[in-house]
Structures are given as structure tokens and as C-alpha cells.
Length: 160
Image (cartoon, rainbow, N blue to C red; front, side):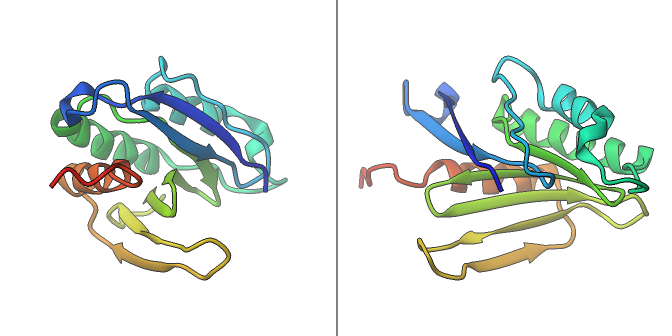
């Protein structure tokens, strides 16, 4: 698995001006998904789904339902959060996932080719240890917004 750090400015709405966030970007096939922050996540989804290097021979591509559902949840969240931070887009076996990482926190949104609702997996993993992960099998834009704020708050000084 290859990891590549990407830094970008977090939205001013989080009241942390010029705070840099570092994401580890990776793909299921081991190549680096380096998406410039100026591109939208919807463009990144389309590009990742169209890239033949993201698939093994005979592997199912994401269905129109998986793509549409992913974009729907992202649009709902962007109405609350603002511009969605770039994450690692990985199509696999007919599904699509986007993973965001910060410090020891991980957030993954997955959509499926069948009619199942989107899923959120999130949690923490101390360095060198197994993680403590939870999941939500009915992901919405509101829930993604909440979890993106949680992941972005990792490593920030406590201002209480």
C-alpha cells in the first residue's frame, strides 16, 4: 500500500484560518490517487471509476446507482460543510469508497452497486495497534458533515 501526504487549507467556516490538513491518499491497487484540491470530489469519482488501472481483470465497475448515491451524499454534506475535503477515491468490486485520514482518525464513505444505502465507517487507530471502528449503515449528508468535522478536529489544540 502506497501512501502520499496532501496538505490543503481547511474551510474558514471551521474558524481555524490557514490551518493545514494532511490526508493520506491511497488506492486499493496501490497507486497514488493525488487529486489537486481545486478539483471537486465528483470529478475525482468520475476519474477513478474511468481509470482502468483501478480494476483487476474481470472486476465489476461501480454501477450508476453507486456513483449517483455517492455524489448525492457528498452534495448533501457540502450544503452543510462547504467544499468537501479531498479524500482517496477507490472503486472496487462494484462499490466506491472515499477515505479521509487525519492523525489516528479514519473516515470512509462507501456506496454499493445494489440498493443498499451508503455506509460510513469511522474510528481511531493508535500507531501500531488495531483500531476502534464504528459504522453507520444509513449514511446521509448530515452524518458525513458531522464526521468530516470530527476528523478535521484531530490534532487541533483544545481552546476551552
